Image (cartoon, rainbow, N blue to C red; front, side, top):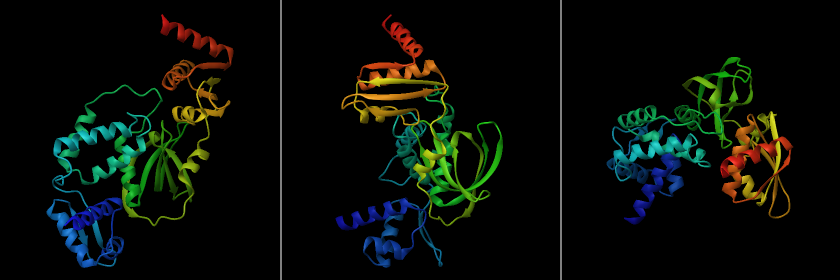
Length: 317
C-alpha cells in the first residue's frame, strides 16, 4: 500500500509539471504498465483530482480545473489564504521569492475552483497597498496568465509601450518569465520580427492568450538575454560607496541591476550605485547598510556624502 501511495503521489506531481502526458510516457517514468497508470489515474479521480483523458495520437492525460478543490490538500479557506499570500509574494511582497511564488501560484490557479478564484480576485481587488520603493510592479494577474501561456506553449498577443511612449502590437511565443528582483520581463520569440525579444511586463497591455500551440525551438539563455537586452541604465544619480561587508553579502542585498560591486579585501565591498532619485538612493543605501549590519562610507561624489550626513542627522534627531 505504501508503494502504491508513493507512486500515485509521483503521478500527481508529473501531471502538475506539464499540460499533457501520454500513457506510455507516464508508464516509462514510473516503471509500470499502462494498465497500472489507468488504475492510478482512477485513484486520483476518486480522491477528487480532475484528471482528464483524451484518445487519439495526440491524446493523453492532463490535470484540469475541478468543480471543487481536491481533498487532502487544502480546504477552501486555506486555499484562499495561500493564493492571496502567493499573489503578494509574486508581486514583490517579500524580496527574493517572486519567481517561486509565481510558480506556486500558477500551479494552484490551475486547479482552484472558479468560485474560490473569484473570491481571491475580489479580496485582492479590494485591498490597497503602498507601492514598493523599488518602482513599478507587474500586475500579478497578468503574470499568472503569461505563466500559463508559457507552460502550455500557446502564443499570445499584446500591446507594448516603449520607453518613448510608442505603442506597438506584438505576437509572440512566450518562453520564460525573468525577474531581476524589482522588474519582471517576458523572454519570447517575436513572430513578426522573426527574432528573440524581451519585454518589461509592466509595459504590457491588452494581453490576449490564444489557443494556437507552438513547438518550442532551441533558444538563448533567458537570463543572459535579459541581462544583455536591458543593461544597467544610465542613471541620472550615481555614487560610489564602501560597505564594511563581504562581496557575497552585498550582492545578495543589492540587485545587480542597480549596483556594480567589487571586493575590497575579504570583508569590504565597493559598490557603484545608481538611481533616478538621489533621496531614494540615500534611503536605500542606508537601509542596505542597516540590513547588512555594516559601516557605510561614501567615496564619491561629495554632494551625496552631504546628503547622507543630512539623512543620518534626521535619523538621530
